[in-house]
Structure formats: structure tokens, C-alpha cells
Image 1 (cartoon, helix red, strand yellow):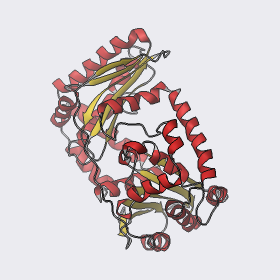
Image 2 (cartoon, rainbow, N blue to C red; image 1 turned 90 degrees about the vertical axis):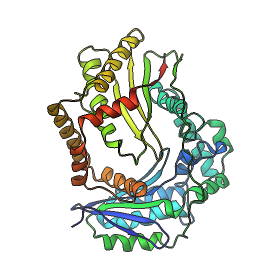
Image 3 (cartoon, one colour; image 1 turned 60 degrees about the vertical axis):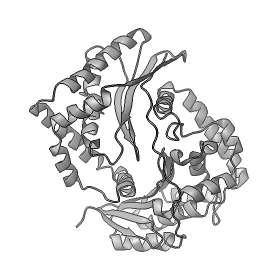
Image 4 (cartoon, one colour; image 1 turned 45 degrees about the horizontal axis):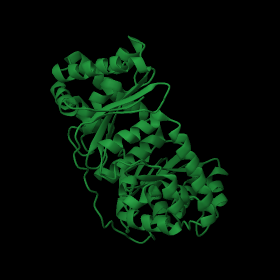
Length: 405
């Protein structure tokens, strides 16, 4: 039996399914539309639209949308990123058809009544205020805004209070019509049903949606000069990001860079930066590294927080680790351990069926295929110490820095 099976509906919506033994099913409609697809006068609209689709449809009032799966013990939710919007549901196996029907209803039949939109604006304003109280969150958006200056990738997902006040049902309908086209959609699922059974259910509720095609292309961000900026935020601690532009989601160097970032500041307590800043020197409680690949570019960010007087010493230690990775290849023994750790983390994450399902949908959306764990294993094992050293040199030869002080 194949790990994943795919299908395509007549209107162009693609589907991907994995059959597992479970009494629970997870499914999602993944749309290749996010905040980078907003026009300058639409900032924050993708996220507002994601909230608004739950506020009533041609067939249901808002409370009926909220209760449809929850009364059965299931869940319905959604999220927006810079490049995609996802509506997802979790139910018992016997309620799978109800989940598909509800996702279809909110995705294609939402009515955006102004009374409900007014309430949702207040919810998002509260979300914006909460976000502004968290410098550890804000600094990432400020960093990407500078790293991708002049590009739609730069602005934050939530938008502004003033912009929210302008948006109405027509604004949302216009954005969705332009960006949520069927050629940019994947329906992903995981559960104990066969792919033929899944396709029948998904087809019943989604294939009658008119076929639509995207009429615009994303513009790759222009290069920017490395920067170093200090922003006085009067915070209790210093918050700092050190990073650079990186490879896009289709780059062959994406995997060596992923390994490099995992070595530096991945989730394990033995990551190099966690060991040197936290374990050996007690300088920082929060130290992490992340690589975010986008459609046509990417970003790496090393984030830490510390007492103000420790900032320069933390930077010195981080720069020393980056230089070491650029100057000397990893030993065969160390490289083998790193690969084993990376693959184990991946295998363990796949035990989470919901996360696995969402990742498979995004992969099919972007690559039109998905690697099996065995294929990923082979690719990871093929990465060399020289390749990791090469990407370390390319990415970290010149870095940019943003500091909240």
C-alpha cells in the first residue's frame, strides 16, 4: 500500500490521502494564498478573511458553524501564514463526511454579514494588542519587514487597526475571488478510509465549485543590504535576531541548511547555541534558530533574549559558533549523530497525524508531490559535511541584526 495516494477533481482541486488505522480522521483544505498576496491597500485582509469565513454561510449562521463539529466532539479551525491559508478539521471516522461538508461550506459559501464582521474586528484588535505586548513575537515581524523591504513578504499577518476598520464583506469577497482559486488548492486527509471512499466524499462537496485559475504571479523580493538596527522598546530584557536571506522552498540546498539550523538552534537541548549560551554560561533562557523557506526566497533567524549587559557577549559567542561551522567541516561521527537526530525528530513528528496531514497537503500544493520517509532518509544520508560548511559560508558570511532594547 502506498504511503500517500493522490487524486484531482474536475475543477482542479488536488487531493492527497494517507490511510492509517485510527478511529479519528484529520482533513484540511490548504489554499496557496496568504499575506504576501495582499495588495498594499489590503494588508491584514488575508487573516481577516480567514476569521470571517466562520461568521455565517448561505446555509448556516455563525453559531451553527461553530457547533456543527464541536457538538460531535470534533474541531474546526483555520490559520493564515504569509503564503497559505488552511481550514482544518478533526473528527471521529464516522463524521468525516460532515467535516468535509462543513469545510466546503465555509470555504465557498460564506456570506460575511456586517454585524458579525464588526464583532470579529474587535477580536482581531484584541489579538493585535496582545501581539504588541510580546516583543519576542514582534521582533520577528520587524526583522522580516526589513529583510524583505519593499516586498509583500515583509509586512505582518495581523495588519493594523486602521486597515481593519476599512474592510467589509466586499473587500473579503474580492480578495478571496482573486487569490482562492481552485488551481491553488489541495484537500489533504488522513484516516482509516480508502482513497476511493475519500475521493467520493470530497468530490460530492467540492467538485461542484466552479473551476478558477490564478491570474497573477508573485514577485520575488529584491535583495537588501545587510543591516544592524537597535530599537528602544524599554523592555526588561534585550531581544535580538541575527539572520540573513536564505534558499527558497525548491532549492537543492534547503536540506543541508535545515540540518545546519537544527545543529545551531533546533528543538534539542544539545543544540550548539543552547549549550554555549544557556548550559555553559547561563546567559539566555530563550535561544533558537529557524529557517523559513518561501516560494522564491527564504529567511534564517537566530533569536535570543538576555539581560541588557549580556547582549554583546551573547553575540560574540554566536558569531564564534557560526565562524566554526564555516571554517571546519563536521567530523564523520558528529555528522552521523546529527543526521540520526534529525531523522528521529522527523519520524516522531509524523506520529502526530494532524501535523503529518497538514505537511503532506502543503508539500503537494508546493511541489505537486511528497517524499516518503524512506526517500527523505536517503536524501538526508546523502548530505555531506562539505555541503553543510558551504551553506554556512553562503548564508552567514554577511548577517543582519535587529535588537529590541
